[in-house]
Length: 447
Ligand code: ATP
Ligand code: MG
Image (cartoon, rainbow, N blue to C red; front, side):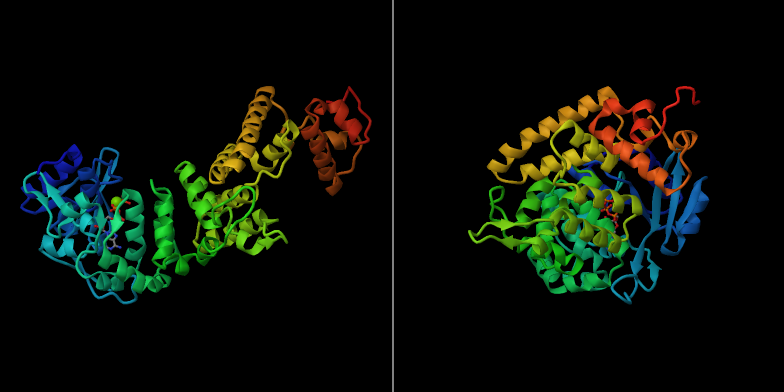
């Protein structure tokens, strides 16, 4: 079988082979190239030791020399070249205690997680597929290499990776592999939050974010994010919903763009509903105040997963405002712009739209036209250049002091009051009317 590989990768393999070593493209890139997907990166596996690799290429970086990885730099691209290795005893379901180099490609392929990730390719040797990876690709299944239970004991992260790959590729998880996941999901608690974050993020940003339901069915979310299990178990019965909170969330996830902030917001937006759930005498279920509770949970969960602050703040804010608690008017939109900022506001509109599309027909007929109005107001506000933040206000602290106010906390309060007024009445954003509003004398000669 012949495969298209980038010229750089062919060059690295050829260079290693000319020096008497074996070398292959391996893992995810082989899988993706066969599927016609653009590989994220091309990894190379070789019989050469790190020192030998370094002598063959002009520019290299010691990326993980202990684990046998050297990055070869060609032009502006880097390629990880890793020596064939066997992972030693696993101490704690996390890190191999030691890695041993080996002269055998087969041994190197055996340590890999899934059959579809355990294929190697070189232009001379063609495809090396010792675990029926090709057959599993054709059938669309994720299957552990060798005994699934043993593989998950060595490294429990593979449990979550199985669902992640099934979400990215739209594949099913093979039965024995799934049974082992069910049995061993608890071991995910041994894995570092950083590694969990990477896999969850890839799962959510995939073509099938709704596959998180599979993680629920297999007992994975119970370990990593029990709040997800709660929404799956929370029914909704009101004018806007006929799905459970969980099923609505899965539907909304499918409707939102594959953006990191949007997908996390959509996942978390209703996590507060189980707590806020209240039933009327007529059986209707309300969720008053759920957005605020969801935002608190979102913050805790993202923090627990070691997300960066920017992500944490943005998602928490989007979750907090996902119900658009502003009047559907130009003033309301200006307020929303002020609370969210110019960057997050357009994302909020996408969140609102996906949320609406995840609801029933009646809800969509109610909310989508409102959303169109909001979008129109937003366009008009931008065109008019209306003031929506303190920095656009026609006066600042210095102006107030020049007009006779004392420096201090009150200054900030006055500016806030002026801004609130201007958000309602943009035409009042002039020095004259704002100083008048502040109860100060307007002097046209002020600088
Ligand atoms: P992506 O497209 O996300 O990069 P990938 O398959 O390349 O997917 P990586 O995490 O980049 O995944 O790992 C590269 C290869 O290394 C995998 O294809 C697999 O062969 C092997 N691998 C990575 N992580 C593990 C693991 N935890 N256990 C066993 N093998 C692994
Ligand atoms: Mg990769």
